Amino acid sequence: MCGNVYLHFVKVVLLCIGGLRSEYLSVGIADYLRRLQHYTPTELLEVQEKKSWRKLPPNERLREEGKAILSRLEPRDHLVLFDERGAAISSRKFAERLEKYSLAGHKRLVLAIGGAFGFSDEVYAAAGDRLSLSSLTFNHEMVRLIALEQLYRAYSILRGEPYHND
Image 1 (cartoon, rainbow, N blue to C red):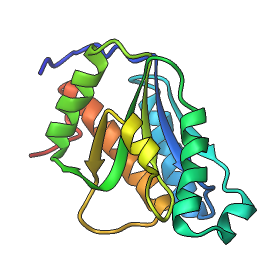
Image 2 (image 1 turned 180 degrees about the vertical axis):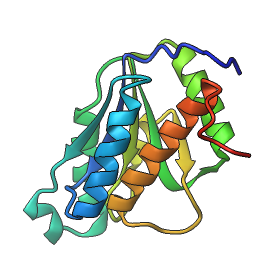
Image 3 (image 1 turned 180 degrees about the horizontal axis):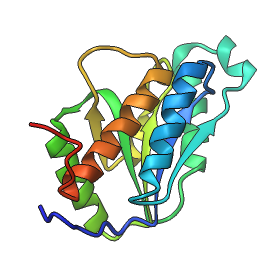
């Protein structure tokens, strides 16, 4: 890895199902979004949960959420899912993957966080990669903060900055 790598993404998008209700997490999320602007344009994009979805069986709810996720994708996006069954990798390996994704010429890196039941088969099929943030289970609100912190950490690793300690 290069210490001063220029990553070619126009934008990094953290795509999430549902809204955020915890003020303390909102503060942390806003902080990491602000920090990430130093490296690349970064946006948090929420797919608002429809009230009608709550009454659906899990497989139908997954389909509806999946349609909503896929409708937010643009041509030349690279979709990566944060998924409990994804690859368990270190922060350094995540930085390496971020560099690899950036060199592939995609317009946007879209990092998706699913709802309570994960992702539909259609979303899995559209994804270029699946990563696990932990073998522990976190609520979707906490995953936002953890994902943004790991993204910030990965950029600092790629830039050779002192944020990450091995």
